[in-house]
Image 1 (cartoon, rainbow over the protein chains, first blue to last red):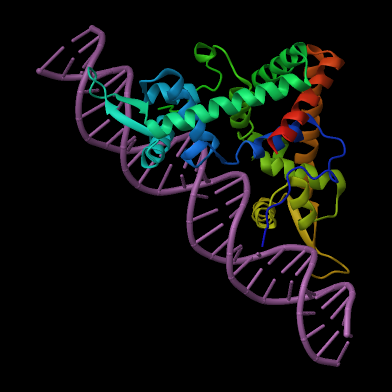
Image 2 (cartoon, rainbow over the protein chains, first blue to last red):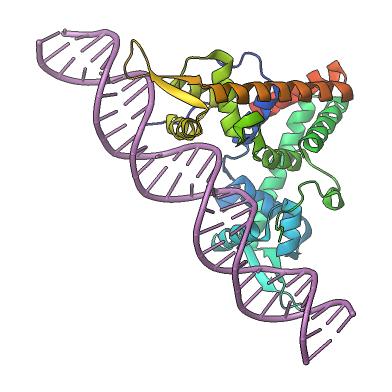
Length: 149
Length: 149
DNA sequence: GATTTTAGTTTATGTACTATACTAATGGTT
DNA sequence: AACCATTAGTATAGTACATAAACTAAAATC
């Protein structure tokens, strides 16, 4: 029995306020997606992998800053990713309090799958919008974030 | 000890992809806010109140459709809102399976506070962006939602 | 050397969902 | 009228994602 509601029910989409649109985006952003062989990953998980893969050798606390969450949240997240064999912890060579994070082979696969999905996504955007429109859109998002902070 | 990270840390904001921006919006959208005398409400709560207040006499299942969540989620949400004395359940006069929802006095206060906040927000947007830019922004959001569905 | 800061973990808690299984009422169908 | 599928709502268990607070251990500063 599929209980899951359709998110994009055209019958209820009359006049959408920005608040409503953001709420919808929010819900969509929560859905796990498959990334290559790495299996389905939640948005937090893939964003974490993205942040590690983009730089390599990231510390837990750096990650917390970058993802704008607490250290405790990162501990939990990395715990899950390590259990899934996507990320590995190594102790820092100099500072033995610190933990250095890196992607495993499987993690790299997920990272690359995500990268190429992003590329595809950007291509799609560019098909539908002009460079100028995309710029306005990005500025709008940034403004929105600043207004809501 | 304040463990809470700053969401808008300018030092880490180099080049923001749309994905990253959306993730940030997402986090901001989760923060509870105060609405008049009604106390702090989570985004889900205030959106629910908004949906009820905008039409009045809404059924649980209609709400589930409109908010694009399962009926179970609505049951839980309404339970909380009823406990806070913001929403009241009445049984449907004709169909005794159904439950009709309406706002209490306090719920109305929250609704109106939210409305006026929305208005202020729109005014702020209009100060910073042209009508055309806002339109492009909304279209962008809608497109994004469709792409992600 | 003592103290403070930093790195990370742990635990308990809360929100926001889903999925699944359920009860009860309604509405067709024969 | 009896049967059965559908619909409305609830209950419960589980997951993801987060915080706050209290903690250990190591490093840095004084």
